[in-house]
Image (cartoon, rainbow, N blue to C red; front, side, top):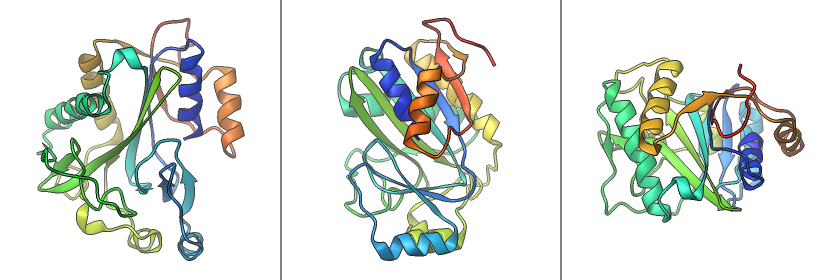
Length: 241
């Protein structure tokens, strides 16, 4: 997630839009920027082998490991001006992507409100992706320096029981592609999302790599630079990989 933060900083220096996908090595609990975690919960996570990381975006805690995480970093001018409208645009694209893969998804009802609890997936907020009334994908956004960073987590499979218990996640409110009877490969979901977001934004992403300055900033924010698919809107020369 330090990479995503570095990409947002790079955008403010004239970098192009980036769409990035990644998965996690084992279970990790990501905390929203303003969240705290008790000593007891942190100790329980350590005992269960659950790592803890803080996002630069807001929102509530997400348990990663069985999900596909995406990060869209774009100039504010590429998205609708309001927070809700930009959320809605990305949600529309992801609904289109999952629907094209045969997943029976729906948008959360307009009256839905965020639950002031710890778990992002306990209750769907407005303009989130659900299936059968249970939350399938969650998201959070940050705006800075004329740019937008939107993180999202699409649940591919159920999280391990010990990881859920130690991190305080409420599995009853969430679902996953596997639980819905659609055990799709990560590459299938990624490809469908890329195509849908390109159509929604009216852009074409090309495969790219991190700039040296982005790698340095990301490494400074964590213990290293994770690998993951990187798609960039080509606005400057890019080394293809």
